[in-house]
Length: 471
Image (cartoon, rainbow, N blue to C red; front, side, top):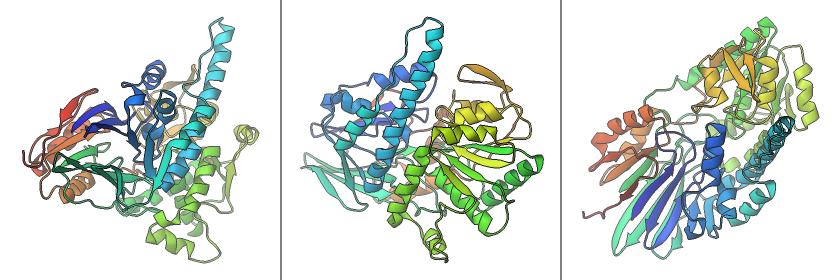
């Protein structure tokens, strides 16, 4: 067996790991790399391997940094199955098409500006047609249902508790009579978070690929998150401003809507309109409604609380689908909450809302998720006084507030605790990925006592041979 790492090493985007076993090549995730525009385009368009040589792919979950380059993989010659949960397949049906649509729109917008400078147009990374074709390759699986994807390789998906349909990937490999278990956490969720169940433990791993987004930090207590959200909304309302929230359409938007709903039910918010301005978020929310089997007990109890409660819909909430209705939000003068994608403020309608609101001191830009380096979201978190949006400079006068309590990623203590449960007995090696370098190195140090062999923080392209249990 051999592992090679082609993305999300010493950074968090573009997850892509390759397992070779018994002559088969299995790709773990195929995410979009997000960073400087030209570098991202070049890395995403040119795969680091021949797509036709990949026998199968396993997708841990539907977030674009894990799934977003699947259309390029398929267009480049991949012909195998893409195994994932049924919920992740349904989410990808919406998300990959939306990703393609955004790229087509952004390419058209940039090309129009370039035409004024007599520059050639730019092409989207992939088209809606590419995205739709890739959906033919998905195979939906249930949790805890082992499937032989080859005579000597069994795949089982366990609930990761990160977003709807997210999975911890377990591959049991029998190679020349030697049995080994590889566990890939994907993105690991947190205990006690609303909507979804807690991460499901796995036993007796030999090799572990573990994310480290928050490998050097602890989260604020979940219990304080609603109160902090309330304070931000009330203070902005009193200034007469708007709360502008870049939020991932999958997971984070639904968590925010559910939190605002709870606060509304408890009469802890002023009466103001709330808009989810994202066709993707609307489509994704419909997918959430299709998969109540993924909900935790608290959410099921909330739904059963009477009056046909919908966690993702209430009287003050409006889902905005059309571009015309989205543009009308920019003419609002009264306080409001506008939640829009993308979560790192790199594309989509959120850019227009930031452009129109970031220079008004009455407003608040609320950051509710981790922001990758070189993204507009990170620049806002760093309180840079001037940011570029669509190539033009804007002075940031709005208040920028970060709430980490909504994070769907396990923190340092939760990651170590999860690894401790699967490490007994016989964890031969761990590979720490999906984190900025300081976070990955810190988590590697924290895992050292749990692993019989090495804890490795790979670099891009690094390859490792996995030994048998007896070695």
